[in-house]
Image 1 (cartoon, rainbow, N blue to C red):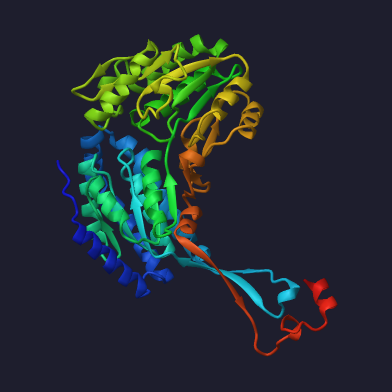
Image 2 (cartoon, rainbow, N blue to C red):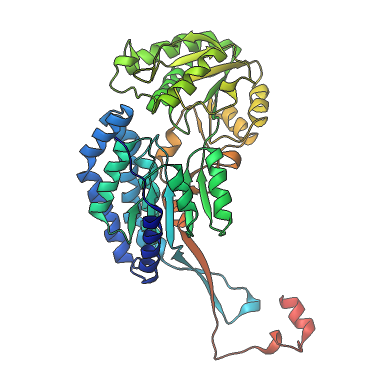
Length: 460
């Protein structure tokens, strides 16, 4: 299936009608926002089967995995926003210092305006619709730009959105990087982009021309530490799950393993056992094992197999775009597999003797989107105190993304800004400071020629 590029003329038209619709004030009222959230909630249920079929066609993603990693996360986000929207929208009174009396101060949340949401192919439902929940909740209009690399999913989402919302409110724009470039020439009030750091720099550069705020959800090489005191079996199980989820095509997948020398051989054996429990004797036959998204992605990831000694896995099938979960030993830290985000089911291992070595290794590289530690909780807390990452888990992987009550976002090279839950509402809102002053009383000390100056200085 091929995606047809939206024309530049249509892009300009959609931006124009959305700007006019936002200016009308239609999206600002609580009742309207709540109704639109409920519309999206109903649409997600009604379109569940077509979404499942499209995900299977594009990624070989099972309905069960689609529910866990896509549908349930969006559904939970919608429920959370519906439940709390009224309180989030309320203005908040704040203390006014004595020097400003008799004024009163408050903060009001106002929608930023017309939003652009650009999503990648790896979680094409969640990473497109989850930010949309925040845009609707905050009272914005939105243009959605899905990835052309998952054409069936992108087409299905477009049909769902068209059948649910008017184009002047929520619209879908389709196409390749030329379409991305055309979109970025338009003026938006906020851009939320999920993708690679390289493309994130392009988005930020174009947004800077109009001083448009951006939220960048990028990626990077998320380290996973298995310390000497780690429970090997549990570590192997949770890392195997996190690494084979979506065949490793997850921005917060464990990208490389820093493993204590005493754990390596035990971990390899445990990892093999846990893979069998997850996917059977042959991962290729598992209905829950996703394929690489494209031939190009397959060739890139398969090329990493030569960057170390294969101690587990290593089988490939170019026709199916299948790569077996693989552990690599004897990896050179300067090799390509340790320089680029893998985005596939290959896990390079580097051993260490002292925990400080692992910390120094992490700190010598760009800040990752996620960091995982397996071992004693107090030791994990110590590692977190001496490192930086977008998010982290101690004795687990991936799961921090599942809690909508904590922000999801990167730091440094792995992104800027965050969303999920109230953070999504805040991301698409402007916190406007308002000072209201009575006209019944007008204290003279602030006016020139500044009488009673010694008293005024003490008040200030």
